[in-house]
Length: 111
Length: 121
Image 1: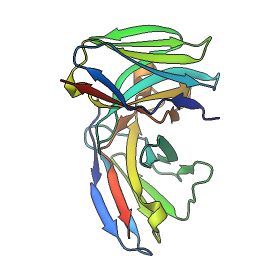
Image 2: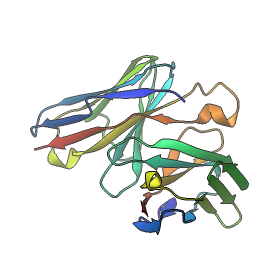
Image 3: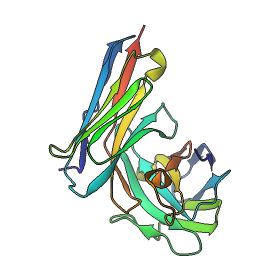
Image 4: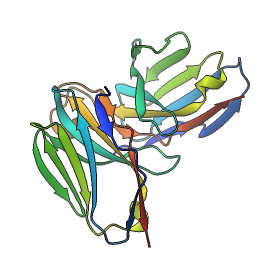
């Protein structure tokens, strides 16, 4: 079993839709959770990070963490074609630097 | 966030040759840099943690004699793939992490470079 599981997609939605991206993880020691966006042939860029359980909102993006079920989500409101990319979730143990990534979900937002 | 560059962005080499990839922090002094490898449709896999002025720490299954890492300054880390073979063809990405001595969640962010596409023929 992988430490972080993520549906690879592709996920195709119409412009303006609400997108829900999800990951599950197995490492109970994870304290920090990140979402990265990666455009084709580019390095990942940090979108959001959260600590422990809870919600965090930044513009059109909302990250949710439920540590009891080991489930993390990223919601994108009013999705735009420019949001088309691969979204990677990652977990990190408290006090450490090592990130463990999911495989990434490829998102396509169509006009 | 920090700006990270990688050079080259793309390289094609013949089997058996060595390739060096540079990772530079353009505006931040990084005591720690990370090297990842990403195969198509797969997640980023951490290969090693590069510490300035000391030996790199390799993840299980990564051959340290094949993937030589040098972190000679606070702004430069290099990865050399020695005696490359076609199975080493991949997307290599570095990232840097701020000084672990600083407090706060934000201080643990990792900033990624644009990646280097290596093709071994």
